[in-house]
Amino acid sequence: MYKKMIVLRFPPEITDQPLICSLSREHDLCFNILKATILPGQEGIMVLEISGNRKNVNAGLRYLREHGVKVKSVAQEVRRKDEVCFQCGACTAMCPTDALYMDRDTYEVKFDPELCKGCEFCIAVCPVRAMELRFSHEKVLA
Ligand code: SF4
Ligand code: SF4
Image (tube, rainbow, N blue to C red):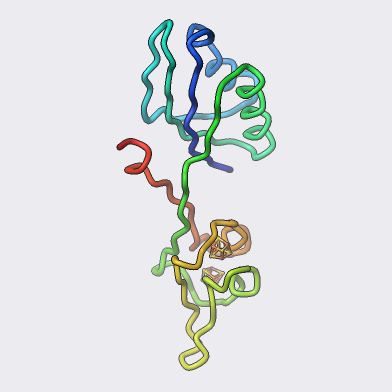
């Protein structure tokens, strides 16, 4: 299941269109609305978490853009669930920034969030899903 958090801005002339309903129906997507301010005749803003098959998510975002909605991705951060990681090291070969690396003294796989660029390669490769995407709700909802 692919997830993405997005901010949508609806120009005043389209705030009365049922685009989000169509998005869900036509592209087989689930969504969770975290914040919405949409008044007829004014610009609307909606923050939502959208999930589904990656291809459908991308098609859905294209659909919104084609209908005049401004779509912006929200910053995401990658975290490691230390209690789940069993130190197999598979992620260190995939990480392009050395945010995941093997400590040469202790042979421990370490994670430095400061170096992470959010490419998500480690999420795909980790056999126990120790790496996860988190969304910065505070940044969006402030
Ligand atoms: S998301 Fe990419 S950059 Fe960040 S730790 Fe994983 S592989 Fe490395
Ligand atoms: S692939 Fe997953 S389990 Fe293996 S070291 Fe990396 S985070 Fe830990």
